[in-house]
Every structure is written in C-alpha cells, then in structure tokens.
Length: 137
Image (tube, rainbow, N blue to C red):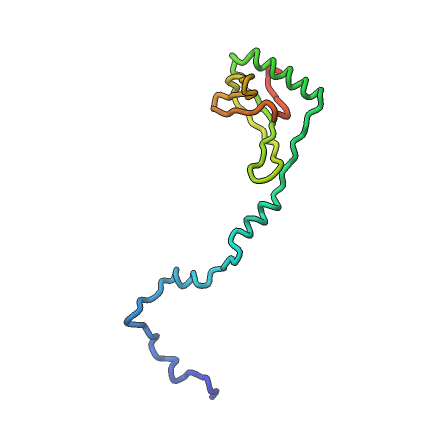
C-alpha cells in the first residue's frame, strides 16, 4: 500500500460544521467564476473596433435635386406623404457616424429649424439628408 491511500478515512461521513452554515451551491460556484482584472477593458476594445462612416458632402447637382424634392414636399405637405429618407446620424462616442434610412409619414417641413417633422414625432435635420424617396418626387 502507498503512503497516501486514505483507506482509514475514505468511508467516514463528511464533516459538517456545527458553527458555520454550509455555503450555497451558487456561492460556491461564484468562487470559480472568471475574474476580469481590467474592468471595462473588453468594452473599450469593442468600442475602438466599431467602425463609423464619414459624412459625405453632396455635390452641387445632388444638392439641387434635394432642394427640388424638398420644395415639392413642402408644397404638398398637407397630403402628409409617406417618404423614405437616408440621412447621416453622428456617433455619440467618436467621430463619424452611420447612414440610416427612416421611413414615415411627413407632417411638415420646418424651414426655420431646417427639419422635416413626421407624424410620429421624429424630426430629421435637412442638412444631414443624403437622399429622399417619395411617390411625389
């Protein structure tokens, strides 16, 4: 027999302390859960790796086309037309942003604030519009 065979204690009952309550299985498992030494490091790496797009400055002919479309929409805003707008949405965390497409029923054009207002309360900046699609124009 080896020096460490434990045959003398292998069949004894498991010791249970009378002073200290047993640890729950959940608490025992928590002892072995992974530990992040640098809190937030993974999130910072994901944020750095997240890509953003640059704002595209429109050519003069594209600006003229958008102006014509906006004028048609303004003249027919009483119809509350369904329109689809692709616009630049700046990123709140870093430079750049993303081009997003929004579809909705137009309420009116606010020329003073340079916004298109929709019936659901959405307001989009005219200065960030890339394209407009509508049955009117």
